[in-house]
Image (cartoon, rainbow, N blue to C red; front, top):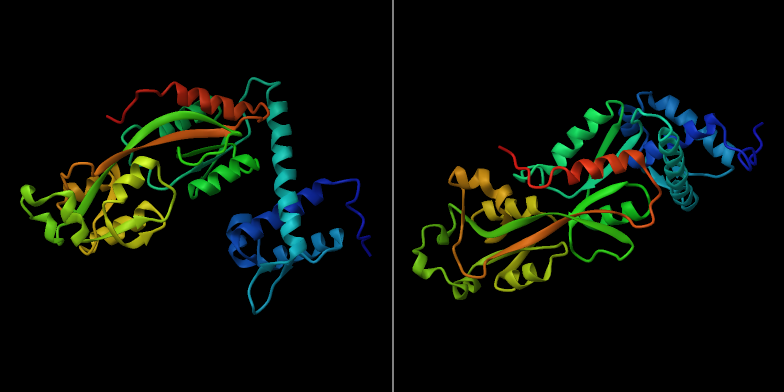
Amino acid sequence: MVDSRSMLGQVSDFDIRLLRVFKAVVESGGFTPAEMVLGIGRSAISMHMSDLEKRLGLRLCQRGRGGFSLTEEGRQVYGAVLTLLASLETFRTEVNGLHHTLRGELNIGITDNLVSKPEMRITRALADLKVQGPEVRINIHMEPSDAIAQGVLDARLHVGVVPEVNLLVNLEIRPLYDERSLLYCSDTHPLYTAPEALLTTACLAEHDAVIPGYPLPEVARDAHALLNGTATASDREGAAFLILTGCYLGYLPDHLAAPWVAAGRLKPLTIADCRYLTPFVVITRRDRRFHRVLEAFLDALEGQKGSECP
């Protein structure tokens, strides 16, 4: 029988493997979804989880007809696993600094709908990083901005790309670019064919509009205050869904709306004060340890200033 105290004071390679399996199961939401991530079958995953629970002497999760869920001990162990694996990655990158070849991981968090931005600094910096280190593993996480900021602070993410809104002082901020948002209606909305003389801020109160459910800079809050907000969206894609119904006005980044504008599905309304800029920034921890892959990415990003997609 395995002693429940077997992991106290020592962590073997086998233990690390079991902890990585546990992390994948938690982040996948269960044993079956984790099969694709881990490349092993459900029975093997179940065996690994049972081994880990025996070695820790703790029940980590509930599984069965009611679905997969973590116990309170499981949640605490998951947090400790993240800290441990982040420390291992830090060790790996520090050792890599002794060699000329760039190896390791870059975990980057990016908010939604930035891939269509004409200034492709992120894309080109990632391409440069891959040229410098062909063995570098790049992991992109698309998440809300607050989750990205927290991920950078708890070292789950090395770097994030977020709007410059409500950021904590213990984050180091690098300006990236401004994103322009305009007020749009769809081709089935009454204002689509309205004469420009009738397009005033006063008319906005007569039409339903979608309001973001995510944090906005002050200038954006002022612009949204002119609208008759009767619906909310958790992200920009959700706002686009509602605007395209023809029932709502709403703000969208111009690069996101561009394909629909080109197709005649959306139209920006030329109303004074109905536009704003959102500054986007790159965030890292102020007290971060040296991470060779991260520094190479930040240098590549700095080298892309002013570049635009042809």
